[in-house]
Picture (tube, rainbow, N blue to C red):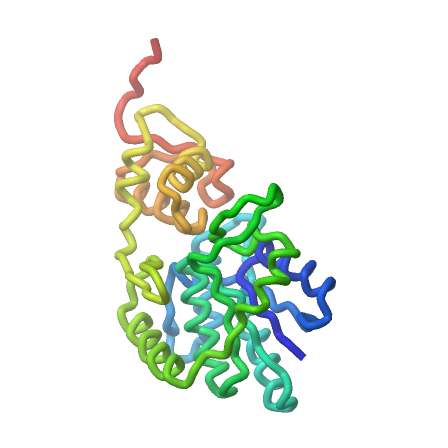
Length: 273
């Protein structure tokens, strides 16, 4: 039995299709939802679980958003680990894309699957060429961009995490957790660099004007123009904080989705000519 771990529903879709087409890949797909490149990595309170800390963090960002996220990643990992203890032939595979969220997910998974030497596999597509639907070479940043046919080929990349990697990467994860900076970036390979909570604030204020704009539009402009790999909910949380600091003005209900309110800089709007 194989347990295929992948971050996000979109990335999981072509992997599920590939598994249905290839007997050698058959197994359970475990979709991770938590994006560990933002927010706390240690328990908020001594009597709280890590899952509670992460769920509470996402609730604080999304507030009354109807798309509120519930994190059940730990249960998936513990169930798979239990099966690996019971079945010596079972394996856990992590399909790793070159993003901070994926790299952090790898480190987090390793902290559990290091108990199963030579049975925790990774498929790392960083810097590797694939063919798109038109037969042209491209370098995907997510498995969501890769066809099922190409994913079947990618199974050849699967390799077990080595004992030396387990030792080094476990120590690296401890350092990342101890630093407790809330924003994490991929800096090549498996390297993560961290930034303070206000890292994106200047992008938000520089994108706004003294005229109201939909918060969703501002956020999408920032993400697309700067090729950011950060959850929209994080930027919404910073907008609320900037509003409390009187650096941005909110019009509408900011406890809902970014489509439900507008934002602007303080001051009178300049009339449009």
